[in-house]
Image 1: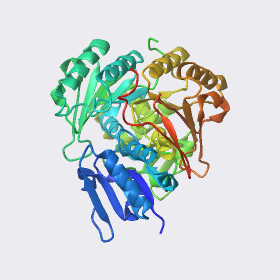
Image 2 (image 1 turned 90 degrees about the vertical axis):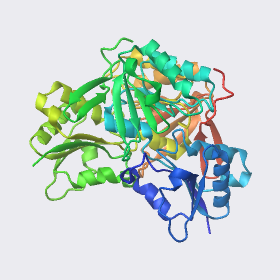
Image 3 (image 1 turned 30 degrees about the vertical axis):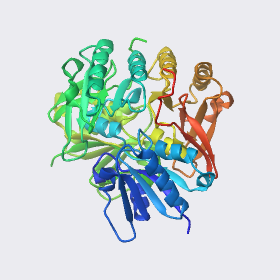
Image 4 (image 1 turned 180 degrees about the horizontal axis):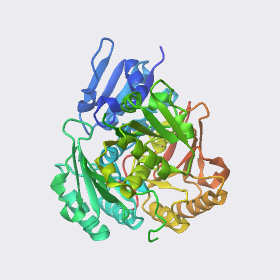
Length: 253
Length: 253
């Protein structure tokens, strides 16, 4: 029997946002591995072993998945969103690179998913409709000075900015410093979106000027998007639409 | 009868990459509007009117879609990839903003899809596994000087960079200048991915150092991703894996 490993994106929460490609991989799997709340989304069935694990053990989880595939199991590592964006795909490749040579013969596939920034963008309008960047604000794996440097350069480039992991209990002050820096370089009127638990029953969207943004508006389930200088708001009956026009022909360069 | 408008992403080409949310919207539609090759992907059926249109008429197409929804039709505007990333969602909101006030009462939804950079990233490994930016290289809607400024700042920020619309027949020299600039600021050894027609039978992936990249390796169906200083390659039996590790703790800042 020949094993394989798929690293699959479950999207932001709604089952209607999981691609048929991912659904088919899960249907053919013998083992599903991942962070506890993501594995909890998989319906148990005969012949399928679920391996939920804690956060912050990504490399151990990745090595476990590779080892099971090497033993001939059909393994799906589940991520929320897209596995290639601040998620499990890079962790699996780090483990692969550091691991035994025979792992490099394995059948490994990454199966794309709807990443949080695109789910949030769709719900709010189209803030990422022109050039943009995506920055992980967690400083677990990155020095603060690099985060600050990237924020300043991204603002100078006039990118819209999507922020993953804006705020955690372990470092509540970091996001406050990010908001201060953004107000300094983008101005207090620049619109910011807080999109919490998008596509789930807990979904909350909030669009406001940077001057009114507070760090406690974000938590671990919140995606934050700051507009570029061109991003604007259309007031509609169903709520505000937050979008960036396609053209920058009139913009300062 | 109450009309609605959904702006839906068909993903990069493979039907297995279309979300069930989009499939359900198409099943309930009375009208599908979009660029000819995207509308050609929709299976005709009784009760469904297809409205294919040429490229570069995005605003006319958007206004047509809004007007049909205002008349009570159930309208899906189809984009490839994700409608919120260099695609039809921003065009619809531009038309909405410029249009009659009653359009602001319409039921308008954006339905996310798998955008080209994430499909390409998944096929090649995980080059966007750390901070990154997305830049549309078309200078139809943006002055060249702004493209160049963004490229220099993105390189200074050490983002991985995903490029949409790298090269067209109308401006073959633009992408050559982009490659020259990237070699100057990132060095000739930095890896670059050319991912053509991802998820279709014509799919071609090519990963090479910037020093060996040539403008004619990209066409209108090609997504280009340039790694950050940390992006690397693992040689595997099935081909090279192109990925960016999650940690930048050791990187120069």
